[in-house]
Image 1: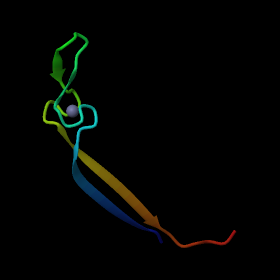
Image 2: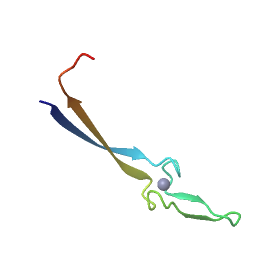
Image 3: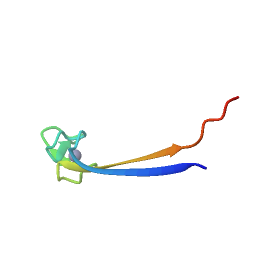
Length: 60
Ligand SMILES: [Zn+2]
């Protein structure tokens, strides 16, 4: 018989794409555009899901 456990972590992190600024440099000089990753909020929700399966060890 095997046993499965699920863990889920929700975490708010600073957006790495814009370094928390909410905007990124656009192709035009001296202009910025909204960061597409965090949609301008400067932060992202990160969800980590881990599944652990435990089962009997069988030799061979
Ligand atoms: Zn961003």
